[in-house]
Image 1 (tube, chains in turn purple, cyan):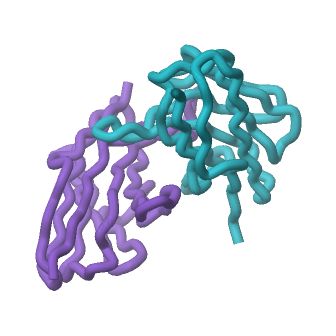
Image 2: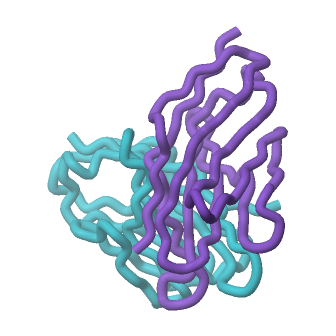
Length: 116
Length: 114
């Protein structure tokens, strides 16, 4: 079985500060990893994904994440927070093959607040 | 542009009512999913479908059923709504295997059961 743990249900940063949202996963097979963002009253939007290849993945809106197999982590970062980054962020994992292909397992979510 | 639509943004129903939540995608995706989202719990998979008339239970199927008569439409049915089914329901779709995989989400339906 797969699982995802997001450390910190709420993260608060000042505008211009570094954003770091933590995600650790558990998977018995090589994982595909995702970060999604949900703005208020909207559905989820894909920020970035890791499947194979380069472990540092760049996404939209200046976000990036690094897959660290040894630490089973996929933390999301952005060098400089903007007010428009305020949203809820979800880390998710899936595995290739088998009957569960395409099923995503989500973390609990992290609400990011950005202060002026 | 990819589009997943859900029939209602907000819905209020009474305990015991039969409730239908509709989802339509225009991307010719084989896979479709229904999740519920609750604070502190993230998204939990209720049911998914790999093709027309195909369905599989997710992690929390109890109290729900689904229908997929056409490729573009996936319906979630609450046979007898209960207050603990008050939640945000999100529909998603995706292409099947081979290569990078991502799900496209609809805007969600916030269901309140009184």
